[in-house]
Length: 304
Length: 243
Ligand SMILES: Cc1cc2nc3c(=O)[nH]c(=O)nc-3n(C[C@H](O)[C@H](O)[C@H](O)COP(=O)(O)OP(=O)(O)OC[C@H]3O[C@@H](n4cnc5c(N)ncnc54)[C@H](O)[C@@H]3O)c2cc1C
Ligand SMILES: Cc1cc2nc3c(=O)[nH]c(=O)nc-3n(C[C@H](O)[C@H](O)[C@H](O)COP(=O)(O)O)c2cc1C
Ligand code: FES
Picture: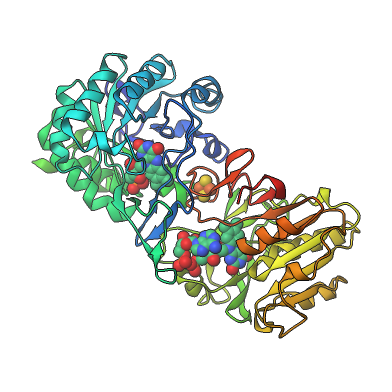
């Protein structure tokens, strides 16, 4: 029997698979399809202090081996999530959930860390400083080491729960931002958020997305994500959660070899609602084929 | 929602750039006309959504128009080929609101779900008035099948090559009937909603990421706030859509 369990910031995951934020809602739709407790965990939709309507439609464009979205953090706001959605979630998910939070000021992040930092169901805070689809906040924090450190510090002061800073590949230097987050007290880093991208409609001679630009995800970004995880693994000591295009057990193992302790699966859930349970079911056979007894043994193993 | 592996029974051209695709397999997830399925097209990442034209037994039928890469690839499907689909998506039309004299309005490739609703209403013993609008006689679909059902549609074409010349809104009496149902391109739906003097519902389209309510990709502005075309719709009350 192979061992798929991993530890992420002192919290045990039965397997390293975490459904990624924005591709899993708050879990309810998926809970009608399969038992969510098969997951390592899931990261709920990026939640802001107040409700957000998001960007105008069209918000979705197809891409070679991927998709581009400009949803713009549409969510019901922190109060509704805490008072309505978390209690509902307790009925269909019985493991620690990852709270994905996003703000447009350092104060917003602190307020969100305070709210979700005391929720028993929340295992980790995933602090999204990398959303490319909101005008202020989001990626503007994640692209600048000093701003990223300020957000990390503000969250750190509000909670003892593990803080995972979610990084963007669109920063000048993702390793500088990673190091700044580590120094400011982050427990872990997750990466990558989507890669800024766009499509143009040939007939209309205009951008497909109403927002013009969006974020690319899906298999197309896997090699970029691997490169980012690789670089950051060499620059920091804290654990990494790798994501970007992961769709198969082989992708999970590749991401872990690059340096990820756990792995998030995003867009794959949208095109195949059973993507996560399929990956989880397939992991033991892939491990046996590759002579891996315990997944935690291979984290960063490709670095020699 | 149910994920189903279908086999193609038929995939034939029936009008200018329009194909009639019949799939055999599980249709149990479909509960109302106006629902849709989301099809995987080989070589493309995102699925493509299509309204069901009819469903029942072990067959589901879709009429699709070739407009881009995905629908072009679909024309290569041959009998026996496998098609992966998420089925039973969306709310569908509420046939219960039809009343005694419902009015059905279809525009172009928005006609198939309206046809599906007409079948349901006729089954319930209600005979709807049907109005269909197309660009030209070469684009007309399903008109003969409405007649076979005992419902003679009023057809309008923009170029006058069949039926009345003009738009579908030129041939409807806006105050006649108990309730209306409409599906078609956005400009047509807008015109219909502002014309009609009776209550009704409309089926909308939006580009989709998932089709089952988790990505917030398919937003529509309504008087109830931002809703998802795929999970809260595609059918909305006419008065609640903010165009
Ligand atoms: C609920 C619903 C029901 C539909 N029913 C039908 C139907 O019965 N018959 C039919 O012919 N068409 C229908 N459509 C439209 C159909 O989904 C698009 O024409 C098709 O996806 C175009 O794909 P493509 O690759 O050929 O075009 P491309 O333009 O190459 O597609 C690129 C992307 O745009 C999306 N897209 C393009 N146009 C539309 C559109 N109008 N609506 C949604 N997404 C779009 C595609 O899904 C894809 O992601 C429906 C759409 C929705 C949302
Ligand atoms: C539709 C959509 C919405 C997303 N929303 C969020 C979000 O709210 N918060 C966040 O941190 N990341 C969000 N992401 C990014 C994903 O969590 C993930 O980082 C990215 O898509 C790369 O992984 P993937 O290729 O497996 O999708 C979103 C991605 C998609 C496709
Ligand atoms: S397409 Fe994903 S929520 Fe509607």
